[in-house]
Amino acid sequence: MINWCLPGALAFVVVLLAGLLPGSTHAQIEEVPRPERAHAASFGVSVALGDSIAAVGASGQALCGPNAGAVYVYERVPTPPFDSWRVTARLTPRTCRANAFFGADIALSGERLLVSASSENRAREETDAAYVFERDTTGQWRQAARFTGEPGRQEGVYAADIDLDGDRAVVSTTGNPEGAYGGAVYVYEYRSARGAWTQTARLTASRGVEAGVMGQSVALDGDRLAVAASTYFDRDPGAVYLFRQEEPNQWQETTLIQGVDAFQIALDLYGSTLVVGEDRAGGEGSGQATLYRDDGGGHWERAGALHPSIPYDSGGVGAAVSVEQDWALITGYDEQLDKEFNIDRVVYVFRRRGKRTWRQRTILDVGQVDFGAALAQNGSMALVSSVPDGGAGTVYVVQLP
Image (cartoon, rainbow, N blue to C red):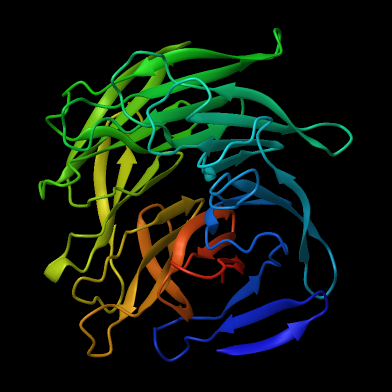
């Protein structure tokens, strides 16, 4: 690993893995400058990446009180020979409150951001919410909408996870981890004629809590939606529900994937490709990321699994996943060095050749046990965060090889 300094106090790292993997190559990792105020350990708890915009959540940022939260927006500035990133905005909701955990999850689409503010409270007015921010013609970000759950429903924490694609947003609730009741997913659409967002659907699990408690994580791409259903404290495998919008405002459940071996199910969706993290699966619990493919009619079929070239017992591979175009990123542990606990977490980089063949391309490794906490991609560029239990978090921009 080589480190050197660049103008603007940007650290630049090149991870060298030649000789470790056949055909492996270099990956350039640039440390994003952390704002002076963003000293909380939660900096990097969520990340999002666009063509020239990056967003970083810091849900533990103390503003009006502890854990009020904030989101930092960066813009890419061409500064040959390397691009640099600079902070251009810090986003907070109009009404700031302590323990809101604003920025726990973020999603970026174009010049629009969706931000969750989700704590342990059930959804009610002035508590859990999701916020839409838009960048106007002057370059300023403004709060454009605020979503909350439907009062009186037993559906768990609102804004447990979120996703955004163009004029469509989805926000999930967690249900009850003990399985007393299930969660839900709210679908919102932006109506340009009215200049406002409207709730157009509320989706629930067809199997109740039998297959898992719905809503712990979601992934949206166009008219396709994937929703995780975890069994949480039961050791039983969970499930993933797949929905598709067949007609305006009408969503149909097309596939139920069962046997997903993870406590917190990570998933990501890109077109007809779905990646599901199963960090308890595989030999000796090494973990894996399972691939599924839409057959074109809305039915999803298993298309293989991604494993590291050298698996480790209890490796936790699949704790976080990301897929876009022909790249997939999978978080897991790389080594134990004869310790009783894992000490080095990495991000495995896979690339697809042809339509179905995936190969491990390289390993991103900065020597930290909390690396790979959050992942985001935009083509061959990625954001990867490291979020420690104590001290400040770090976010890296990666140019994938």
